[in-house]
Amino acid sequence: MCIVAIAWQLFDEVPLVLLSNRDEFLARPTEQLHQWPDQPIYAGRDSQSGGTWLGIHQVMRDGLYEQNGRWAAVLNFRDGVQAGADERSRGALVTDFLTSDKSPMDFARQIELQDYAGFNLIIGDALQAVMVNNRGHAPTPLYAGLHVVSNGQPDDGWFKTEKLRGRLRQEVLPLIAEDSSPAYWQDAAYAVLSDNRQAPADQLPDTGMSREVEQMLSSVYIEPVAFDQRQAPLPTYGTRTQSILTLRQDKHKGASSKTAATLVSREASAAATGA
Image (cartoon, rainbow, N blue to C red):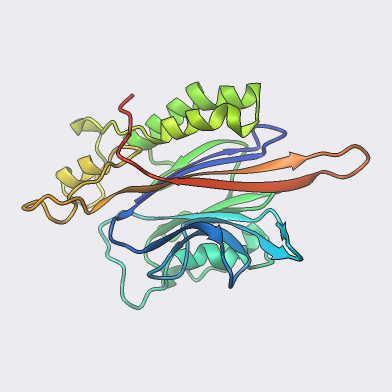
């Protein structure tokens, strides 16, 4: 189901800080974060459909990695409508943007929305970030600030999005303001992404699923749950990958600044926190 938080243009040295939990069926085959040999993409890969949920443009030439600052993330939209067999993989939205030369806004405007099951897509480069979905949210540039989105509309105040927003403001953004070096704040970011506290019953969203399932999916971090097999409760679903993506402005004396993208991830474990 996934959740993404984006601190956009809040810090001069780090104009983008993106945190992501990928929630997925445990049996779905996945390749971990790597440089793709067939496309200029650095990302994890969904082995079933060939796309990805989060990635950056990167290519190796003459033994060196080259980037152009493009990044993208996609989440599904939870409204009880099942994906059709004839619909394209939502992960292709990420790969198509990363390999495109269109601006974020131009790319978002030309998407054939009806070709995909419900999605929230966030795409950007060093200059612009755009959010769009195919459930009524037209392509919209992100304003400078903190944005947290899950599987509903971008402005939905779900328990999990508000929980993540509050903890980021209190525990992570102040650290980045003090020292933007990743070693200074990334442990705190992972700790916040690992919050497994579920929503009180009166704060569950209504997305067409049962209250029991809504409860399972209501935390920032979803511990392995028996999503499909409640009579024989073997874990089938949960948070699988936690990722941090940053864009950093590297400024050199007498030269123009250069934007460097860094994407790191870790496979999720059951060591979540209920803070």
